Every structure is written in structure tokens, then in C-alpha cells.
Length: 109
Length: 114
Image 1 (cartoon, rainbow over the protein chains, first blue to last red):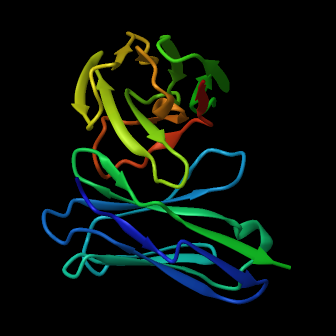
Image 2 (image 1 turned 45 degrees about the horizontal axis):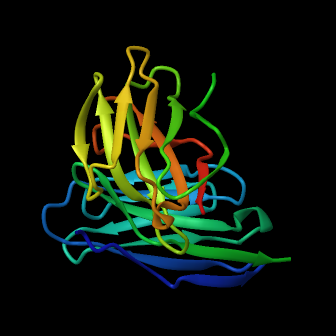
């Protein structure tokens, strides 16, 4: 059973502030790491799929980095907005996706 | 372009009963995966279907079975329901099931077993 851990479990951010959180995964036999955003009452939405060590991906104000050698990825939100409130899931990919429990971000106006 | 659709949205069953959940993948996708999400946990992989066959399976008992039809839609069947089967069941589709392919999820079916 693969251990994918996300921290913190939840965080509160003031509108306009930037924040980041972590996904830790096994550093051996790496294939890909996925990030998903899951807003309340919606379905999870793919943000990034990262495959190479040192990868950096960006989508609007959200970006992610990847370190496969030490087994972690950071997701950054710059200038948080209320619409960024969601649970952010990372998933380690081998023949399936093994998800972490998520980081729930609440942006306060 | 329709995304992934799941039915029903909610379901209440009694212990020991059987349930069937349905999923239509995103147009153009040929691979369907099923996940179970219990409260406070991330989604757990149940199995994946490709070309009408179960290609991969997670750590779930044989009470969980599935099917994929020629039009790529899929069903998840759970027999002899237990209280612990209460969860949100998510269907996700992708193209070919490659690990680099992002999953497209449905809104899920909330199953409550009483």
C-alpha cells in the first residue's frame, strides 16, 4: 500500500495572501504525480500531471513543483481568492492513482 | 461535450443487499476507473476497465465487481453490502489509462448502507 501524505490537512488563508502545501510520496519507482482540485458539490478537476524531477507547472495563480528524488511536491497559490477554496488532492501514479487525503483550503474574504 | 456522468447521485440500501452504480465516460475516453472515498480519506482505487476487461484491481474484496460495455460505459456492483461500504463512489475516465493521462471525474454516487 503506497503512502501518500499531504500536509497540512487544512488551512485558512486571507484573501490576497499566498500559500503553499505539501504532498509526500514514495521516491522509488516514480512514474507521475497528479494534482486535483475538488470544490464543494463538484467533481475533482485535474490541475497538473508531473512526470520529471524538477518539473514546474503553472495554471493561472496556481503552480506546482516536483522533487522525485526526495519524494515531495509543493502546490502554491499566489494571491488567494475565495474561488480557490477547495480540497487539493495529490495522487502518486503507478498502475493506478494512490491519493492523499487532501489539503482543504479556505480563503477568507 | 458531456463529461463523466454517474447515476444515481444518492442511494440508500440495507445491509446484505446488492447495488449497481453506473458511469458514462467523457466522450472519446476508453478507460474507466472506480474509486471509493470514505469520510476523511482520499479516494481509494477499486478497479480499472479497458476494452471491456478489468485491467487493474485495488485491495477490495470480490464483493466488488464491475463491467464495461462496448460503448465504454461501466457499472460497479457491490454484493452483500456492509455498513462500511457507505461512501462516495467516484467514476473517472481517461484515454488509454496511461499514468500520464489526467482523470476526468464524475460527481459521484453517495451510497448509504443502513
